[in-house]
Structures are given as structure tokens and as C-alpha cells.
Amino acid sequence: LSEMQVATYLGFGISTIISLLAYHSSFYDWPFAVTIFVANFVSVVTAGFTGTLAPLIFTFIFKRDSGKWGGPLETAIQDIVGSFCMVVLSYRLLVWLGPNEISADDVCGP
Image (spheres, rainbow, N blue to C red):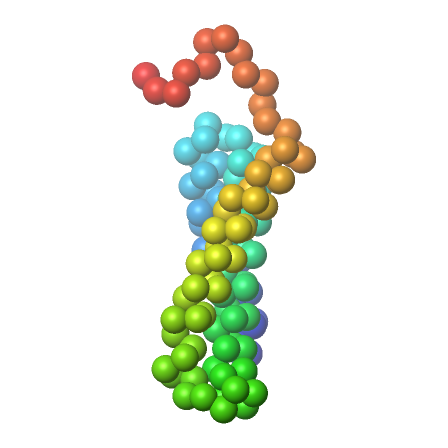
């Protein structure tokens, strides 16, 4: 399998497990579970994409040692994209899917 196929399978598998946990933990709130699935899937696939391309770019374009330059930059890009997915994309999806109605007796805790 190619690296992107593996990243897609891993993203789908991990996102499915985490979204099912989110669905159950949020008392069966499906917009929240879908949001967690999409944000995590995009984050994992982009991590696979940058992890695949970074060594090639550093070796063939910049003529640098990909092992030395790839690790810190890949990690930084993956952290930025992952944070973007979890914050901005999640916010947009939750606004689009719409929250549940909030009643006066809703509380965050026992």
C-alpha cells in the first residue's frame, strides 16, 4: 500500500473509534461525533501527507539531510494543521450542523 492509502485507512479507523467514543460520551449527540470524526480524519491524513512529502522535498529540492531537517518541521506542520482542524474546522462543523436546544436545567456536571 502507498503511504497515503495507509494514512487514509489509519485516519478512518482511529477517527471511527474516537467518534464512537465521543458519540457515547456526549449522550448520543451525533453532530459532535461527526465533528470529531472529520477533524481527526483530516488531521491524520494531512500528517501522513506531510510525513510522505517532507523527506522528498528536503532531499531533492533543498539538497539537505532529510533525517535532520524533516523531523522538527514535520512535527510543527502536523501540530499546526491538527490544531487548526480541531479548533476551526470543528467550530464550523458544529455551527453548520447546529447544536441541540439548551434548556434551563442543563448543567455541566452532577
